[in-house]
Image 1 (tube, rainbow, N blue to C red):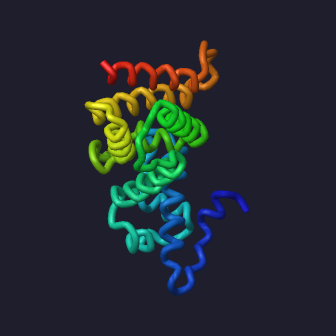
Image 2 (cartoon, rainbow, N blue to C red):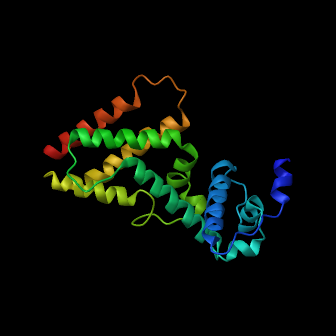
Length: 201
């Protein structure tokens, strides 16, 4: 069966009590469309319904708007990233920061579509920045970990660290084949050392 034919094939109704499975299928389909379609491609609940093989009305039972569905996609993606980072509440020393940066880099490179969706598609997705946005909880945990390690201006340092990590990761996502003179892992070590040296002044 072709992909187009499969998309037209009505989906069998979920057994009673399995509506959550449909919700997950809708979120997964939306993520696939958002991460693979061109930036200019229209995104709609109808398109998601077609991808899953349900009527558009079935989507509205779980999401009342495109923004609500996109929000669910972003929440899931952010949860996956947070799990990959293994964020904790303890103090963050040099080794812990380098390890954290490496996990962030590897997740972004391994999940380029999800990474771009979370951190490089805010304008297209009309998703607000600031507290509650993807990555912001990481900044808060970084700041608490740095502060508990005795570092002043911890929130400022956390934002600088994440900003620089994003730059390193984004370049590897978009320009991974470039002949970089050093490894991304080495750049993360240099970054952490520079930020900690600044904080110690």
